[in-house]
Length: 109
Image 1 (cartoon, rainbow, N blue to C red):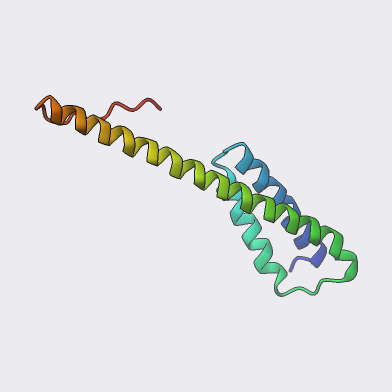
Image 2 (spheres, rainbow, N blue to C red):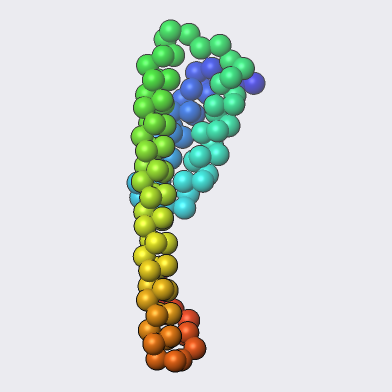
């Protein structure tokens, strides 16, 4: 069974790694999110002391920053989908005006 100190360190390290991965838009963020979740679940059964509080607080701050970054990432995705939908509607409008069947939208990744 891991010690409280080891679990708190893992929570802190995985929170920082998650934040970094989200900021870099790295697909590894899922791995760090899973590590953080396991650490949080393990921490539920372990007693924390006052000396653990600074590292726990740092993990909380990193976790909150990661949540904010994930929110930004989600908004970027929504904006991109909205732009694609707008382009799709524009393409349909052009093909309708030309009495031609709507061609597939040419997307540049």
